[in-house]
Length: 437
Image 1 (cartoon, helix red, strand yellow):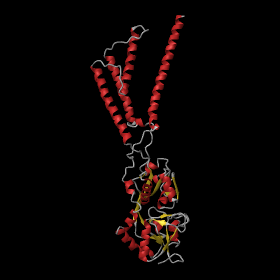
Image 2 (tube, rainbow, N blue to C red):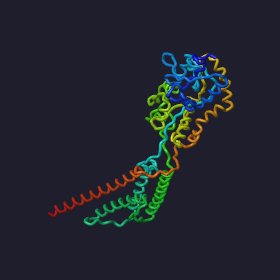
Image 3 (cartoon, rainbow, N blue to C red):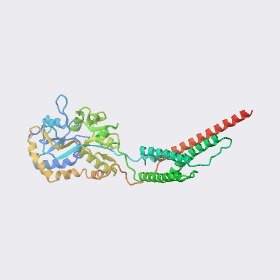
Image 4 (cartoon, one colour):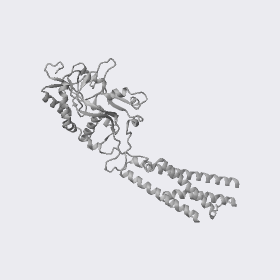
């Protein structure tokens, strides 16, 4: 087999971090390498009787073609014959095939998004959430309409006129009767909806029918409101910031992907006006895998990478926190792709490795090695990202602010009304004194 320059005669195997296939220490060389591909490489070395040492590209990339035609990362090492193969699977595409050969596929993969799942927090407007805005508007419109209908039936039905002391004449008594009817019906419609008492006494069959209908309707509305509010407190639902890439680009949440990957190249080369092209506005990249995953778990950005890598992230996060505080979107992008081992162009080593890869895949050894590092991801994949745990959350001060503001607003309005009445009464009293003098 054609070996890269190596005084020890061992194969040079190019690797870099790719969860769960390769986990690598940053304090090397020599590097401490773990992951599911270690078992595969040990089987290849034992079967083909070779030794190997790991080499890491200086730029910490998988490999992309620069403007001058040269290649970076692990693909660059293979193109320059500075490595004999990759010890981690890489994505296969036409551009890479021009400078490297690839084995039979080990796994299939796709790209997805992952982000920190929101948590239930205090909500000042929570008491308004049982109904939507349109529902509240309909309730208010119904309340006003019912007050108008009751007022109309009250005017049609003869009512005893209220005489205001200090006023004379039929017109004064008639105006006072209309005003009192309007005030009574308005207060009555609000009082009924709030299950409060009222001084209005319906007279006549028409008025009694309207009043009875509003009593029934108010009972239904209040019952539904209380039931919805109780359900929201007992089993709240989380509102996810996005569920696909189209919704993500409408937000201001930054998106992160790893530099030098196929996904990074495809996003940069996206056609203008497409969703991927718009993603470039909030996209940033680097090659520190651990930092990218940690910042995503803290909610600093969305992580856009391979599905198998995200399974490893879910697995590791669950082991650390014993919870599923991350969620992954269901949509995949760019379709499925093959994950293979790469070799220098024309290498005879690929022909010896391919039969072994096929047998490992068909006998389930590749799948077993992979599942060791993603086993707990199933727990989070089977959970509903919009649900919350069954632990009771005590109400906080933020939950009370909305109701308190309504109460303070009502007290303020009542105080302002009282002040206006006092001012008006004082002015009338002063006017009467001036007239007597």
